[in-house]
Image (cartoon, rainbow, N blue to C red; front, top):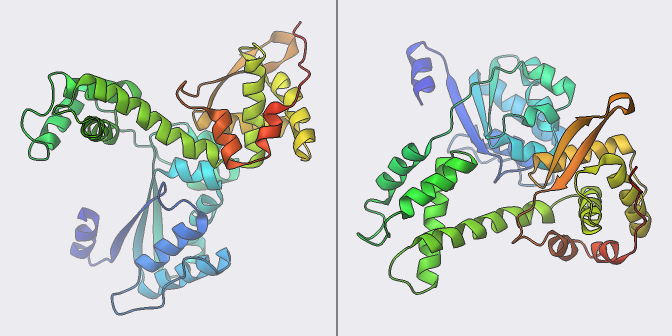
Length: 338
């Protein structure tokens, strides 16, 4: 709003458009939302929810921007979620907007809690971004506690929270991301768990219950929506761990993955491509993949799953894709470690 007001003072048309990429999480939907945001109240020619080729949606966005002119600030909140799910084609297209525009100009701002998500972008996209990073320090526990106290006043009954509940919510959120939304979600779910249990007050045990519920609720859709090949790679990590391995090497994952592909009737990807999928799983928080230097033997990843114990990844994958049941049931030959 301040930028728009400043633009008016300078006689320039400035418009900011924000899109939450966790809710609107495909290239088509983001482009259509941007295009439809430019319509005036009396205009009815909306870009449909589905049905157009993506290049037509992009062309319509360019046409509408040029028709109105000015500067458009496109803000993509939680952009890392979109990149993880749909790839970086959208960023490639948005960074080429100015080359297509004649009377308008755009600026793209991406908001993310993951400072490393750009490492997974195609080098051509990174070079086109010409990015300038603005890093906001996460809230500490005391700041989060102040936010929770302020938000809880008037929204919760007096004396409904036991001593230490606000502090625990703040401390847990500070340990994870320092994200105020996480702290507020934790307090909200804690009150819901107390209500569901028929308790008159919210205690620290409700906070712990809420923490486990949020972890599970966040993880289930991430695992369930993985493409088939990524499911096979994650299953290969879990199968290796079931066999007693820790700090699993890329080659060990790939050896099991090839067998899983045969069981599933898929053509296996190259080991290099599988290494990239492992990096994607790391980015999603499903595995940790540390690069280790083995001297003259080169470098390899050491891979471990990091899925919370209260989340049954195998069950989620089987429920979302029936063929995964056979993948987990079949026998596997494992590489012998030197």
